[in-house]
Length: 231
Image (cartoon, rainbow, N blue to C red; front, side, top):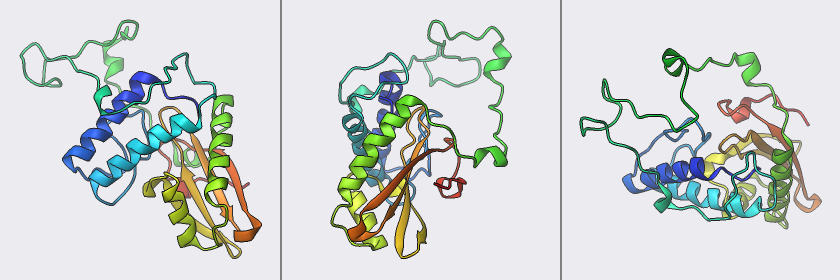
């Protein structure tokens, strides 16, 4: 996966840290459009901590992969990287009528109405189609594929054991999607969509026969289980 852009990743990590601290039981996404597929279910604090650890793990695993942009710091991000937000002129919280936070330089919209326009919904037929991976995402997928293969070494062909091994390797429960087995071999998908990445893995584990890991792309808002990917 491409290295996560510093500012956006810091925002995501900060949001997750706040989730962990408040014990919020938010569903599948953080309160930002840039990060997809946050862990479902379970205690909010535990899920937030798992996601923080997973983001740090992803930076380590994908070290050496080209980033999506020119931002690369090598810094491990944490809760202290939460960006500050300007106060509204009234001194109250931003977002109240008449109070607008100015966009960063270079991001001003020529048409003020365009900023308020809803994001077009992706048709279901397109939403569930696999997406072609960009070169940095191929690097990311390859490195995570090797990590998964190592995590499942010497693990029996049992769905419960496979999930437990992936959890121990740092994958949050909500990012592991159970699929119908392939023959007698358990099959799962792993959601690696972070920031602008669309990477996902499909893993078929046959015990002593090893693991087959295939990478594919999925729209960030698509239910990973339903994406029509066939190796």
